[in-house]
Length: 182
Image (tube, rainbow, N blue to C red):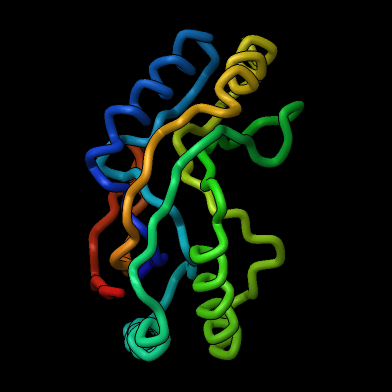
């Protein structure tokens, strides 16, 4: 199965994120918005894994999460990958990502021991749109810069979720495989 670990976005913040998406749509740039039910912070993308790898990943997460407690996550500001001149992904960021990044690095080290590629420069982010072409790129860049300090709100990270991802012509379908409470 094609899998990843995620932190789901608190549904109470979804309306605010959708407001940002509507604001971006006003540029008439070719954007594919992430559906509200698919909003998440990707913690680690594995790609295709076997059931034995899924079991191993589950054990690693269960062991490591014993060292952590739930923590607040403040969603704030927009950004892009790879750069504003050539946008492919538009995202919302985290203010003071220390707790999130610390847990991600700790788990990533364990996953690297299992043979998964280690993240080089992980930036905690919430993908909200994908840019599908160059039309109105300047307008889009201006809008993103205006939203640079947008305040979305705070949520509490209480669990990680192992998700299965099925790619379809209309977009990905995510299915929760296992929840890991912190």
